[in-house]
Length: 327
Image (cartoon, rainbow, N blue to C red; front, top):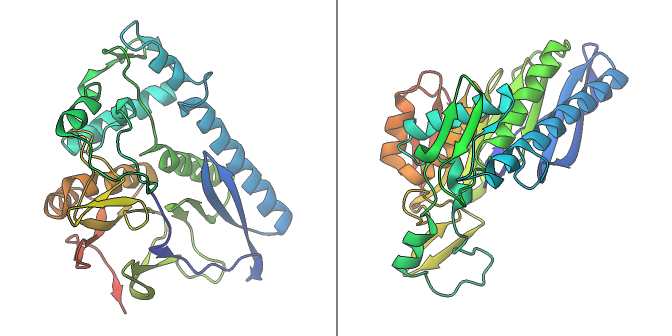
């Protein structure tokens, strides 16, 4: 789950400063809340640019949605164990990058998570843990190693019948990246695409200052402990403070380890700062599964990527090179 509760950005909305106009629009896209903010010379241009971003996000949703029976993703899933499916270059390379992240995180991130049986429920209806055998069986068809790519023919083949892929852990970040890229190509100097906490920024505010993000601890949401500038980069937060179950005094988050079938434990939130929202999106989820120590170690090996982790006891952990202003 990506939420913006940890990331509070103070924006000048629909305000003219130094001849620039900032306009924000909030709407539902890809099944989630999107807040699109652009800086333009007047309100009419700002509205036009926001419409451009919406069209691009909608285009991507039609391509990658596993709920749309006409999408390329649905075609791949329908033909699992049957035959390879030729796809567009765009989808092929998105899947290729997703597999690269799976390898980087030792399978903590895996788009074939969509094959998992939904045995965990986080709506309050679950009273006992699933059996060990049921958990093991739930991931029988999960495994990025069984996603076969043919680069020459641009085909994707899922080896096992009943396998599925889904982009819930990377899709909104990718859409935010593509919308940002398109708006920049149209001459938009600054803005923010916030896809339910998958936040992508570029340029500066109309007053010349960088976009700033305030980090708050979900155990005390009224107090920010740090601020960070996020110009020309993305930040994504994953959190378990809303959807979880507790058994034997252990809180199990809705983020499930695709390798074991067990929900992640011991982390409350993970915020990842990266050049692209696609990467930050995938890594924020992966940190939950990998845990604090392994997660920090992995992030510290990646150039241009930083993170803040709040563990289950409320302790705050930072990657080595993060540049924050502690309050």
